[in-house]
Length: 234
Picture 1 (tube, rainbow, N blue to C red):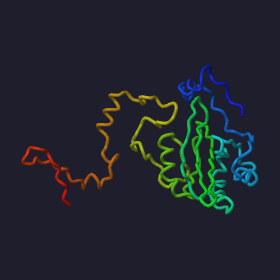
Picture 2 (picture 1 turned 30 degrees about the horizontal axis):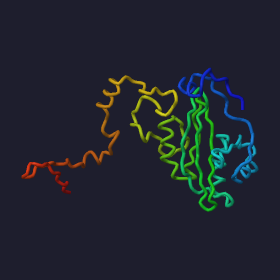
Picture 3 (picture 1 turned 120 degrees about the vertical axis):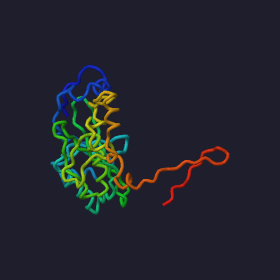
Picture 4 (picture 1 turned 45 degrees about the vertical axis):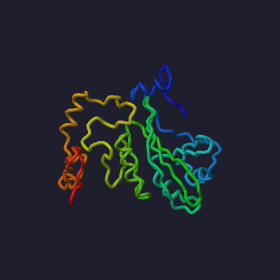
């Protein structure tokens, strides 16, 4: 795979340089292969020859398959439904930003309970096109996981039933905190961050029912002068 030449220094320097340090490379198009540990990799190559871009083995036995984003749902659906595969558990959906203008990787960690097999599937998305189809139609549990990736990395999951922030407040205006181009201290000054925190609508943090129905905690002093908490009475 041909990548743009990195600026001098270590990969730590490259990451610190941010998203604009290197021209955004095109998504992987090679079909390079290494001997896999998991037969699902060869099965994917045979079933979707134009969908598998490349594969690698990480940490000695963790198979990683890079697939074309446009074929993702079709390929993961096949891995889920095919009796010889049966990847019935979606352990995680996350993302990785390597910085330096390189694509963001969306990562799907799969596990087949019947076959006791693990498989990691990745899609590379260029920074100017952070969009991919949702897999909530295959695994309902992808709902909150995809929301987290959307919140922290800015990846938009097309077709998601409720795509909104899940960790940061809905009105959070500083961007996506796990992107390499996100400043360590945030995009606003400390004074502006404090002002925004103090003027934040409580409903960004609590459900309306929690605010309206909350009973204040009462603290009373006993005869010995020690404070003791009184239980809330419904």
